[in-house]
Image (cartoon, rainbow, N blue to C red; front, side, top):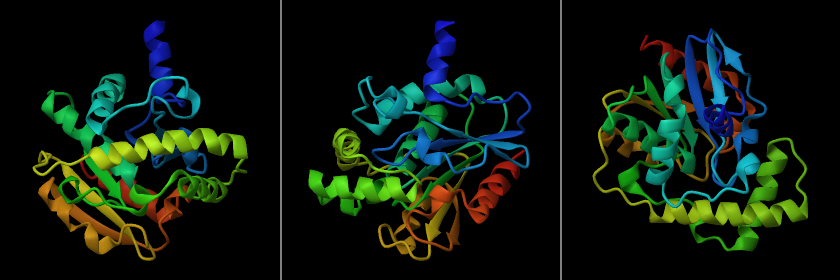
Length: 246
């Protein structure tokens, strides 16, 4: 029973035994699994499973992670029971680095390897750290959180913003410390996803992912946060790239 509760911490929506594939969705910096609330649960037999991270949202009382590598070790162990069908990880901006690290952890430890890794709006590990958040003070980070909550369909409350700025600051510091000059090359494919109107991480800066595996590059229409909608063109990329490996 205690093992079941531990699994529930990581996956607010438990995997279905009937799924033909799974995409684990890692939250954006400072956010929890609820940021994927507008995504469908399933498409074409592939289920989309938001991951709840320690120190975030429903796990706010827990200590957060100090590195993407530390997070990857815990996440790989927690998700291992659900890697029995073709699976992939999706991460956007900073969480794309966490998605890469958990994929690398699975490979290093001899566990099942992902059928695909989806990295959206982020430079490769050896090319960072990068992004506006790295130079922002707490007031600026708070303003960004308010904007993100509104774009996610929520209403920001000042008291919550104050709390979540601490979480976002911790995530930003993890990103700052993430320096990987010689990343592990994954045996499976990577899909690098850029956005035409992205003024945070331009698509042109994502070429370095080819050092981490066999890369397919995809450019979708929209701004940096369009992924929050679970847009059909993005979902099609995720499903097609995953099931091609069956």
